[in-house]
Image (cartoon, rainbow, N blue to C red; front, top):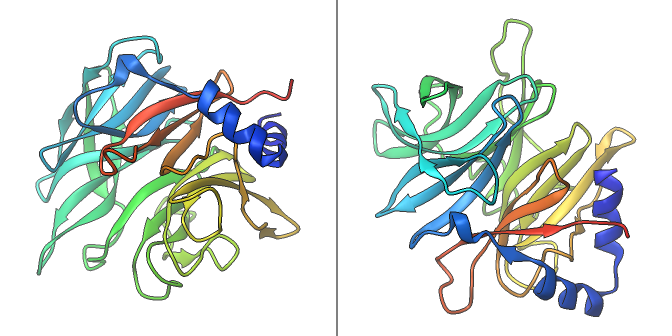
Length: 276
């Protein structure tokens, strides 16, 4: 149903979509801060939302029961070799991962870590990527069944800018080596913030597949053994940057958007995606 709804929204006429996006998308006022908010994540197991906030260059996390509730800051226990935490992703079974900064031999870098979520805090348990993997890796999304992770990286072997990569969980519970997601999901420019809607439907943001300007939200469906070419979700997109799109249990799309006046400042929005 959600995949069909996304496809329908992507195929609506452009003029109608621009009008609908302006009229129907609403800022989540209860979550608005004087900083940038991004990376929303709904944890079905604990039935709460998490999102990231950047304060003075450091990323911290907040949680809320729903989009109408005031959020509170999450207590985070980092590992000895990491600091900061954001970009949470949780599988249907409760496996959770996030992004922290790790100290490398030359400089710190964003990396993916395994975390546990308790009632009172999020605890970083271990790095997912090898210690020698000192490249920028961020925005993980875990598939609902917990077997595949798509993430963003500028590691060698990409098409340019930041690309989407994936890892598969091995029989021993470890993650396999990162593999490039290929030309269907990547362009010579930047791809960002992937999100599994289902095991065969992926949302992502890109400035390399056309669209209405800047970073736009696209969807791709896995069919016939490959990811299909991304289709813009024009009900969400505007001439501003739209990133971090996820689908709420209600069917709404929650995403981050900046403004012309403050291009580096993102706030979280929501829009109902209906086929009525």
